[in-house]
Amino acid sequence: MSKEELFTQIQKAIVELDEENLTKLTEEAIAAKVDPVEAIEKAYTVGIQRVGSLFEVGDYFLPELIKAAEIVKEAVTKIEKLIPQDKIIRKGKIVVGTVAGDIHDIGKNLVITWLSTQGFEVVDIGVDCPADKFIDRALEENADIIGASCLLTMTAPELKKLIERMKERGMRERFKVLVGGAAIDGAWAKEIGADGFAEDMREAAEVALSLLAERKEA
Ligand code: B1M
Image (tube, rainbow, N blue to C red; front, side, top):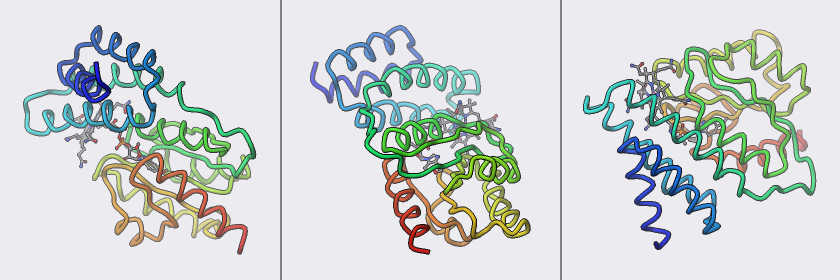
């Protein structure tokens, strides 16, 4: 099977919630030593986004959304192991979580994996994190950057709250703030005063690196 065909089959297995086939196809992808990031972006992410669209139009319901998330999470955990580690230098420390009220973590976990493989030390603070949890952990860990993920329009104001809480606590200059997730864009990130926005996991590492450089210059 060609790589393109394999990716199409993976997307199809996700949309059909066919766990057995997805496991088989994921093993095939691993045996074929596919580029893990390409597979994540072009096969698994596209598949779960299609499930999201079916949910949005009412063809799929919450149980289907949950099932799709479970099988994608498991498959991505296996594929991620193919990502080579950049162990040369520790570039910086980043505390990453999903905002309060939001339990989506597939994208956050991918961002964490990618940042880790790019030389960042990452502290995962989980999902449903209030603003103070980000700040407290960043202080405890002596982090350089706070990274916040947000998938729901309803919880996007939590990102604004995070910046405001940092200001209230006199911490705004202490940490750089990187935000991302399907519910927001670069314009919103700018509007709330975040230091950086990233569309995907690769961009997250690029932006985190530039934020680190800005910190060192300051
Ligand atoms: Co939900 N969900 N969900 N969901 N879900 C969305 C987000 C939605 C768009 C689906 C839809 O209607 N089309 C919609 C939100 C609409 C909106 O607000 N605009 C939605 C909804 C409505 C809900 C519920 C409210 C449904 C309900 O209960 N009625 C509910 C909310 C629960 C809650 O959080 N309180 C809910 C629940 C769930 C599940 C639990 C079933 C499951 C999540 C399981 C899990 O994460 N463990 C789920 C899923 C799977 C989705 C979709 C289908 C897929 C999300 C995903 O994993 N994408 C999603 C539809 C969609 O996104 N199109 C949807 C794949 C992942 C690789 O991409 O997360 O975007 P993503 O991450 C990317 C980038 O965004 C970026 O990099 C990542 C990797 O490249 N990125 C960052 C992410 N975080 C970043 C942080 C950074 C930088 C980049 O810096 C720190």
